[in-house]
Image (cartoon, rainbow, N blue to C red; front, side, top):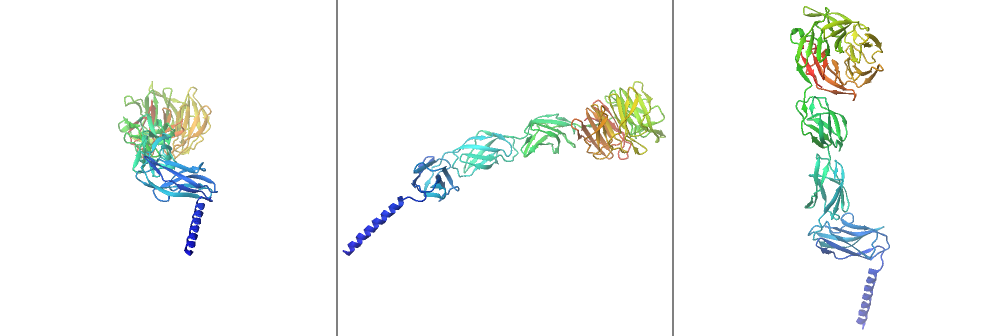
Length: 587
């Protein structure tokens, strides 16, 4: 009887305990409670379902699934499929058809996100049969430069945890953002220009779409001119000259060109100096390079032509020169030789004319031409006695040469007084003339001479710096120009004959100060003791551009202009005056 009582008691207690457990499983909890069903596998994916056994009293803000190749997958650290908000029913499911590797074991859990907690279900595992292959739908933009962001739109990419690498012709892109079926990546710095294919790699697989991306960079359509001398201005037309890292740079082989203007479709630059062969033109923009299909055909500006010949024609520095009717004229010089010679560039021949009629020659005079006649004004009278030269006096005489009669005619003396190394230019029917120095005293006075009336008029003094060095002068398009005497970065002035006023313009970045002339709408200055630079002035740009150096050092040189060429020669070079050479200059 005692044992029967104990058995009944144990039975009652056991049944009561089981009822308590059952009541605990279904009773409401403070937080949601989840159960994950067995995964249902199919050919290219898996279907997952989870049941919410208890909603709890916390606000649900999201729900879904997390899975991984390792146990205990976690939100934001594993593959995930998450929806915002709260489920509409007591169960939710998803189908995973992308990102699964064939024959790979995965662990999966359902997850609910509340305003207080992240809650996971029990864990299930499955072995994958693989999944759908990713497919690129589109990418935008379809063309760009270095650092251009490209957005790639995919299908079947969403759940790929495996790292995806993107290449453009073996250059890897930097991925800056990845979403479910979207990747944003930047085009890296590279040397490519043109159309190239993307390649996507993931795991042991890859994807290579047919559509290509156009890498933009500088492209050359035309170069004009493609032949010429150093220092000439050329225009390069094309595309994408301002891209990537800024404006393009231009090189003639390894020599960098000076750019005047660069826009996206046009480059204006000068041909650099010291070129010794016909170079290919290279445009550099960031990491990009593009090349001209044909080389630039280099021509030299200076060509030696015939000289006087004979010993009597050496030592002719500071001679007087001018040109008339496509012929050049050469007279006098510091040796007191009175001979006058005429140069024919078509025949490359010199012809001797009548000597200067007085008992002396002119040295350091100013020579010019007007209305088919030559002129010589001021300077130093020099005699040659027994092969040696002797200075007579500084003069203000004014002479005219008539080539038809081969005759010199003396005009009224210059009103400004004697001087040497004066400067001037002709505009219209007027000579503008002055400066120079007398007895080591630099002069700044400036005068206007009317060829038709023969009247001199003194103007306001030259406002620039004057010195014992000769100022260089010429005229371009009805404007006069004077460069101050030899000094680096010396002043350069423009004269307006209508207002008779001076305006400072771009300084010459050089000490060149031996010869100055105008040719084809541009000004030229060059030469100097022990150096031979040549500079070209563009009045429309107000800019100096360095040209090919004179082949020798040169000082106190004679020069004249015939047609579209200039001719220079004789003179001094570091104290040597026996320099019987003459050169033709083509800009």
